[in-house]
Amino acid sequence: MFKRVLIANRGEIALRISRALRELEVEVCIIHGRDDRLSLPVRLSDHAIPIYRSNPIESYLDYEAIIQAAKDIGADAIHPGYGFLAENADFVNRCEEEGLTFIGPSADVIRLLGDKIEARKAMEDAGLPVARGSDEAIDDANIAKSLANEIGYPVIIKAAAGGGGIGMQIVHDSNEFESALNLCQSRAQSAFGDSRVFVEKFIEGAQHVEFQVLGDGEHAIHFGERFCSIQRRHQKLVEEGPWLTEEVRNEIGTKVCDGARSVGYSGLATFEFLRDKNGEFYFLEVNPRVQVEHTITEMITGHDLVKLGIQIAAGQSLPLKQSEIEISGHAIQCRLNAEDPLHFVPSPGKLWDCHFPGGKDVRVDTHAHVGYNMPGSFDSLLGKLIVKGSDRSEAIAKMKSALKETTIIGVETVIPLHRAIMDEPDFIARDVTIQYLEQHPDLLG
Image (cartoon, rainbow, N blue to C red; front, top):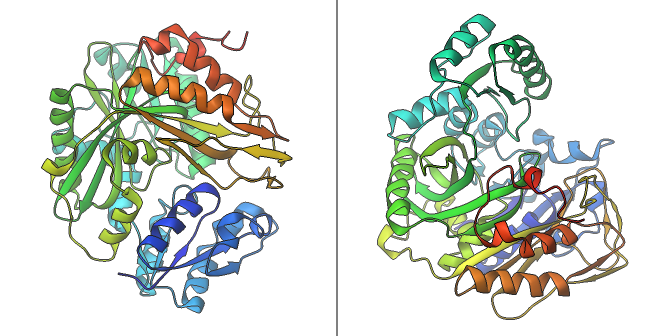
């Protein structure tokens, strides 16, 4: 096991990683920008290294400064968390060159999975179901139209690099193609420095389902699925699990493990799918890192995923067999974002009062506290509220109670929206797709 690990992140995930390291008896180091100098993850670390930049985000993106901080403090490894440098293959290469362990997959695997076209090919070769579409980048509208006519409208144009829904364009007929293609290419170039795009069949009425995987480079196991269809701007708001029958879970779970083994995956990974109204699955992407919603899986399986990822990075083999993974109960997570709940505009500011719920099977992952100054430069996630019930109905009831007890004063939050969702008939009936919020515009009256 490592002696000392540097956390190259902030907020709730930095605190979550810190807890896992302490349980493994590893010293906790962390870098931080000026806005985070008094934050809980920094105050509770063993060693904190300031990296101050005029642009606050650059404090967490300057990987040469981060690597130097790790060397100066004598760290054995760097944990990237999610976001920032978590999927930056160049950063991983530099860690390797400096003799530092990157807690996550290799640079080659990150590079492969970060290219949506190549990832799609690799996973199709491994036996995963993919939607009909192009096998290479398309820059000619006529070729794209011909392909769309073959696979049938609507289709979606996606950027080969990046994620978060940036640049995606849905096309319903051939007259829209040229402008949609140009727009998608332009946005992809601006956001990712890579204008390549590809075309794929658009899955209407889809649900978003993802599988949690852990690999050690040779073997892989899965921890079941999470359901993540309630989203705004392709960013998840509510997640829950389990969602599938045991038969379907075993079928797709076997395939994602095959996919992980086929690329020699080491560490935590999330395989994401769209599921159509007929129950068919279509591969979306692999997120090669810990996910915000890993908490759901931890609640229903009882396994500490963050610790497992660190142990794998330290050179240990998979400590579990697939037969040892059991799912119990039902968990729901609500992201507590500091945003206007109607228009999702960020709401930075000082927290004048702050209270989070507790009790049996209630978990809160947060760096927030009374007096915390929520900066406007970063993601608006203040924390995550997770509950577990014996079944979905009990989990919903428990979440309603927990949300009512949650108090955050000083910034706007999406808590009113979460409370409305928990009471909404379609949500209760599991009639949820990725268009849920668009189809329920009057949730808050």
